[in-house]
Length: 396
Image (cartoon, rainbow, N blue to C red; front, top):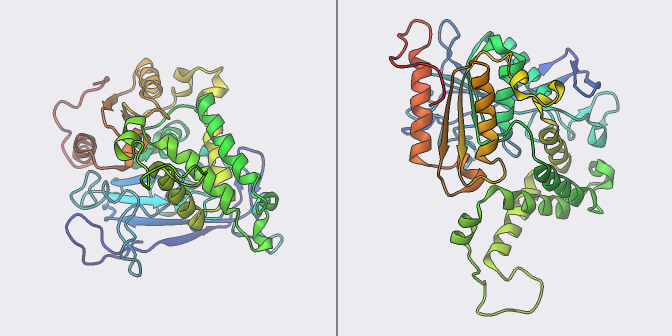
């Protein structure tokens, strides 16, 4: 459990993670299995008496279980969605018991490539099995079982986290009341898969990669990981946002007629890449981008998303951003159409924010008010509370 602390308004305060070991093997979609594994998680708020107010937050590529609050020894360590989760914030921890869990394969505490393989006594490295979105959801459901939570009030995520929220609605329809999927897609486009492959190739081509077993050599494939982050970062921003922030501004008065970081945008990308390579694991990057590639719930239904979403029984809030060209609004509208075809209750908003894919992480008054209003409806509909007026179905 998260430890309570004196907190400024709007903050959950000082928090600490919990590690939970699972001894039972986890069968994976690949046919492999993890004989035993750890999940790291944090919680915020209080679980009510009937355990009906739990909200699971699913993280995206480079995030983690640390959703909100700060760590006692790191005052600048605000959680990655601290602007969304907390007392008085859109996902209000005075009302909801919020769970953030670090996915398997990550490098932030849950079992992953850096972890020691009990069979060898060495880090898993390249031998760590490929993980899918569905595998993550199965592991998350086991965590909920351990916490005594039979049904979640909502599962929420942006980007890759939104894929997990959708998968929850399909895999465990009876265990989820609401699915909130933001800036996501039912499957990656060929272009997105191509970006991921270029990023992985940059990592695998680094001389320090050593086939994924670089831990034994005491090195890190920093150059490849840095380039991978630069590629990814370009896709998270919109063209207009990059123009407004950087334009063609030079770092000096004139061209240097060389190949260093002369433009401000070059300097920014290199800084982001270098910083990322200091804290993220290269094998984790490979695993998570491959999980992105593989996500396609309609694949087993001849590409029919309507059939894939038939099991879903939750109510849905889907949000997209007009300038998000990586996971474009058209992809979210596909999900909306498939849900309506199944007669599900779905609300959809397309927000004209200028920040591209990263908009789901940022402060936008319209976006935050929308999420706050939706979660107010969830709270009012919890057992023992009156259902809010006008809470009908259909897209709106």
